[in-house]
Amino acid sequence: MTGPERHDWEGTRVLVTGATGFLGSRLALRLDSLGAEVHATSRRPPANDEAGDSGIVWHTADLRDPDEIRRVIHDVRPAVVFHLASEVTGSRDMAALLPTLHNTVPSAVNVLTAATGVPGVRVVVAGSVEEARPELGETLTSSPYAVAKWAATGYARLFHQLWGLSVTVLRVAMVFGPGQPDTTKVVPYVTVGLLAGEEPALTAGRRRMDWVYVDDVAEAFVLAARSERAVGRVFDIGSGTGVAVRDVVERLFAIVGRETPPRFGARPDRVMDVERIADVAEAAEIIGWRATTPLDEGLRRTVEWYASRR
Image (cartoon, rainbow, N blue to C red; front, side):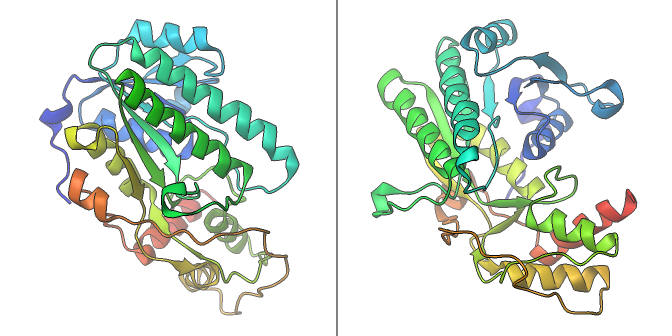
């Protein structure tokens, strides 16, 4: 993978939605480091001490309100919009249905609609590898989140095909890394528990997942936004390799130095878990991207980050 050069982004005005989120925050900082003029949206922008020394310009906006995102995009006039804002949860509870619907689909439609009025704008949308692929005969979806992301991808394709908006969708696999705020996810949950001397309550952990380091994913968004061949396309972004949850847990135990083995099976497996491993061939061919951080190295960096903040 050949990384982007600073001169490719110097002075380019970009807008990142969901920029206080795990992936969105890393992407915003990466673009800032490349010299882009980064604007970011959130319902609650970070306080000054949280924002650090970056030059990111924050805009308060609820993307479910079409007038608010229209105002932001009209004021910023970005060359590229990175749309990452959504409700992220793997829950199978019915209680997750309306939040994932209301916070994912309308915001995507509102961003796409507002961007259509900006001449020459590029839009890169964060999808999920959990989405079903009807073109491959897949019909089973695993969660309300997966369905909401599938719908948002469908709208992105519609805006490109019907109204000519330059859109790319990146279907992202299981992102992990330092600073992940949702500590119910496997990697931070196990890491935080082990560092606190606790025994994580684990499922059988036999499901294979595609684990990909957060900074590698941020780089995929950067590269996709600069590739003309990526317009109108949907790419899987992951390692391309499936590793069972129990294998990742055992690696975390080893990195932390816990001598007792993990006790699997204390919690029931989630229903309708589907193994989806990213097909990264097109991302490599079209946008020149592959994940470069080995799983063990990414896990080690993650453990070190959490350990340094204890």
